[in-house]
Length: 264
Image 1: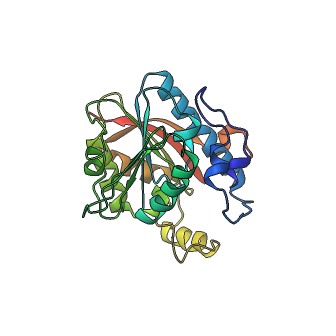
Image 2: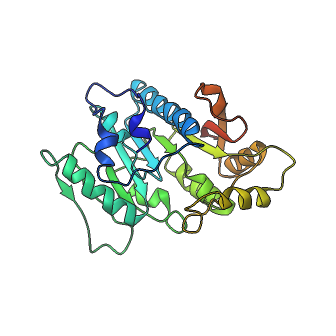
C-alpha cells in the first residue's frame, strides 16, 4: 500500500498502476520508520529489473514475491517473471492477478500435485508456491518452465531477514543451482554495526514489530557475516550499497543492498 504511493518507472508495455490494483481492498497500514528504507529498496530493485531487461535477460525470479507488482509494471516482450512465495500468499495473489488480467488470462494449475503448486497466468507472472524452510527452489523452478541454462535475475527483497542462517545458505545455494553463467542475484540484507550481539539486536527489533509473533525476523547480522553467508552459498558479491546512499532519508547502517554473481 505504501509502495503504491511512490513515483516509479514502468516499461512501455507495463502497468504503472499495478501495485494499487494488487492491493485493492487491503487495510491501509501507515509505515513511518520504514518508509524511507522501503523507498530506497524499491528504487534499487526496480533498477535491477530495468537493467536486466535492457541487457536481454529473459527470466526474472522473484523470491518471497508477496504482492510485488514488477511482473505487471515491467512487462516486456519475451521476458518471463517467476514468483515464489508461501502457498497461502500465492493463492490470494493469484486470485487478484486473475481479476486484473481477466481479459487475457489463461490459468494453468495442478491442484492434485503433492508438491509445490505450479500455475501460470498469461501476460502475468508464473506464480509458484513453496515453503523456503523445506522446498528446493531449483526443483520448484525446474517444474515451471524456467531454463537453468539461460541467465536469470533473482530478486531477494525483504526475504532473508525472515530466514535463519542455515536456511539462508540452503536457499541461496539452491538458487545458485538454477543460475546459469551471467545470472545476477540482487538482495536486501538487514544489518547492524560491528560489536553488537546479534541475538540481542533481533530481540529488540522484534519487540517493536506488531507482526513479530506470527512472522519474526530471524537474521540481522554485521555486513561481514552476511557476506560470509553468500560466499558459503556459492555467490560472489559484486556491489554493495547502504540504503542511505540512495537519498531517500533512510538511516545508515541498517540495510544493505547487494548484487552478486555465481562464484564459479
